[in-house]
Amino acid sequence: MRWDATKQQQIVDTSCPPLTQAEILELISRMVSLIPRKFATARFHPTRPMTEVMAGQNLVFLLQTGQHGDVSTEMREILRKLCYSSVMHLLAAQLKEDRHARSALANAIAEYLTNYSGGSLL
Image 1 (cartoon, rainbow, N blue to C red):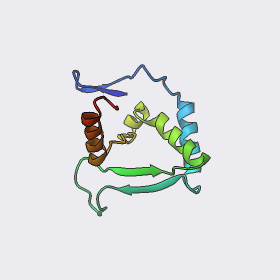
Image 2: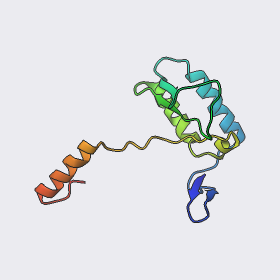
Image 3: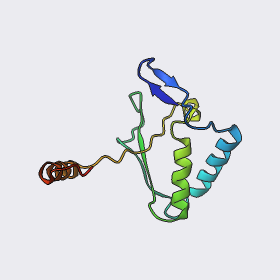
Image 4: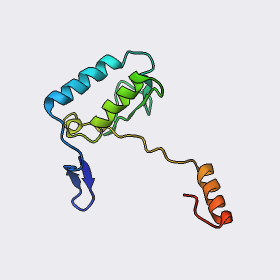
């Protein structure tokens, strides 16, 4: 699924092959078995403090996978397959991959090098 700004709704993303129910169940089952293993997940926490009564429409959790090893690699691949999947809409949830934005310092250095080297480095 992807957002169509002109229609203001989610539409089917035909660039990705659809997952069958059996594939989704297998992915979830495998992910559940990987979660307790060492280095599969680095962090999992809410972005705001949890209270007995949570007000608001959204509750955002951050999940950081491990960076090394076969277990963390498999976990990331499973999560990538589930990202933007319509099965997440059935759960009233969204799963998005982090967009590794460059820091302000990295952008300033790139701009400086581009301006003073006489060419584009990017």
